[in-house]
Length: 167
Image (cartoon, rainbow, N blue to C red; front, side):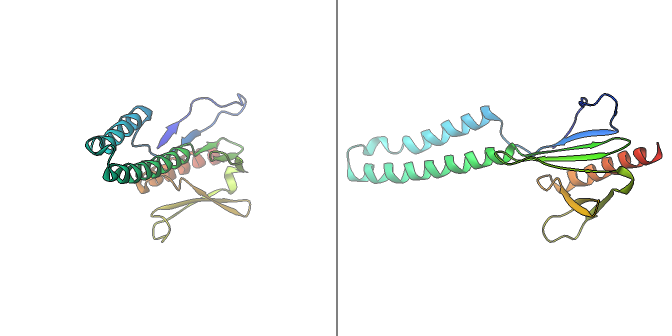
């Protein structure tokens, strides 16, 4: 998901674009709690008639194990949802910040004049694989975005780079 940001810390350097890239989230925290409650009830209700029997014990063990696996995967999904990238393009610099949960923030800066945008439509890794090149490095942008969002991002970055290079 692309979010246009209005604020930037440096008032002397008005950005042509300041955008935050975040992974798409199908459920917010309330929706996740509802799904969690429904699954818990779905595991618990069929066990109630068998409480105290060997079948009930077996069902409880397997239901508990399945529920634990579900919670572990849900937690991993939420951690991936806190990943973001910020792209700032101003007259004198382009800055890309990549942040993942519990990992060191990575920053890449370059002069917009020397920065090139590449979109690889036939990449086997990702459809519409988007990279920025400058200072002898290529960086990946928006790997967690949908292919159409990467196309939209490429257009926005190219427009901002054209503005930066013409001013």
